[in-house]
Length: 478
Image (cartoon, rainbow, N blue to C red):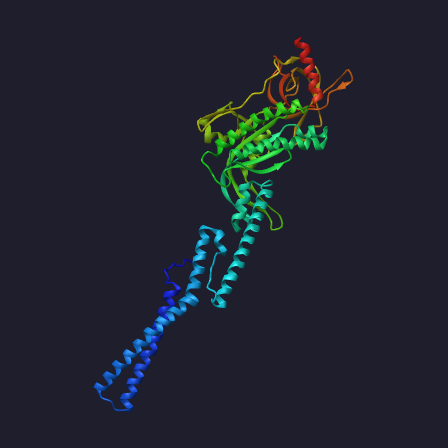
C-alpha cells in the first residue's frame, strides 16, 4: 500500500493555532448568546445591540491576544522547546551517531517529556545491541554456510523469504563437472588422513579458480566438483567463462602436481566436462531437509560428457560449442551412443579459447619421450556402468610409458570404454597391481581382421608400478 507523504506543521504552529481557534470559537458562542439574551430579556433596540456587540468584540480581542501570548510563552518553555530539542537530537544522529545522548533539557521539563528522553536512550541502546547481534549472526551464517554453499547462494537465501521456499525457476546455465581419475583406487592404498589432506589441497585450488570466474560450486561429491555458471546472475558469456575456468583448472593441476610429486605423492589427473542447457534452479527437497541445487537434462548430459574424458582433457557438449565456436580451438567432434540417450552424444576436446582479448590455452605437461616397445601378455576387462565384465580379453602390449599403453587384442575394445588391465607375470618378486585405463582409439592391427590395436590412456596405476616402467624406459634409452 502506497501512502503519500505530506508536509506537516511543527508542534509550535499546531499548538498555537489550535488554542487560537478554540478560544475564538468559545468567544463567538458567548457573543451570540449575549446578544440574543439582551435582545429578548431587555428588549434592546438595534443601535444598543450594535454598540453592545462592538464592546464585546473588543473585549474578546483583548482576551484572545492575552491568552495567545501568555499561553505561547508557557507552552514554548514547558513543552515546545523540550520537544524541539529531542527532534534536533534525532536529526543529529543521522550525521553523527555519537551525538545520540546529547539532549539538554531545561530543569523544569515535565516528567512525561523527560521519560521520553530516558526511554529513547534505552531504546537506542537496545536497537544498537540487537543490530550488532544480528550483524554478527548474519556474518556467522554467511561465513559458516558459505563453506558448504556458495556465498552468493547463502545471500540469496537470507535476502528474502522466497529463498527458503521449496521450488525453483527454469534458467539456461552452463554446467561444469570435474573429477579426478583413479583417486578412489589411490585412496585404498594410502593413509585416509593423508589422502583427505591431499584432496582438500586440490579442492582449495580448484574452488578458488571457479569463484574467480564467477561460478557457483553446487556440490562437492568426494573428488568430484559440480559448478554452475549463470544460476543466480546470468551473463551472456557464461559458456566462455566456464571453458576458461576449466582450462585454468587443468593448468593449475599441472602446477599442483609439480608440488605434490616433489613431496612424494603421485601426480593427479582430472577430467572435465561442460554442457549448456535448461535446468531448474532452486530449493530441492522437503520442509525437513532441502538443498539449493540444479536439476535437469543439462546436468545428466554433463556427467556423460565428463565420463568420456581422460586426464588433462576439457570436453564440451554440442550446445556449448555452438554458443562460442568462433572463440574456440578444438579437436574434431567425437560421438558415442550412451545408455539412456536417444541420440548419440557429441562432444569436443577444447585446448584454447579467446576471452576478453586474452588467449587461454591448455598447458601440456612435459612428456617422457617415445613409448617403450615391449611385449607383455595382458588381460583386459571391460567396465560398463562401474561393473566389471566377467570374461577377460586376452592381449599383448605393444608399447607403453607410465601414462599410455597400446595393446593388441583379437576382440576389439570400443573407443571411450573404461577397462581394467592386468599384466600376466611377475618380475623379480614384483607383481603389477590392477591398472585402470580408457580406450581412446581402436584400429586394425596389420592386414588381419582378427587383430586390433587399442590405444589406452592410464587413469589409475600404483606408483611402484609406474616406477618400474620408468626404470625400463631409462634402461632402454641408455
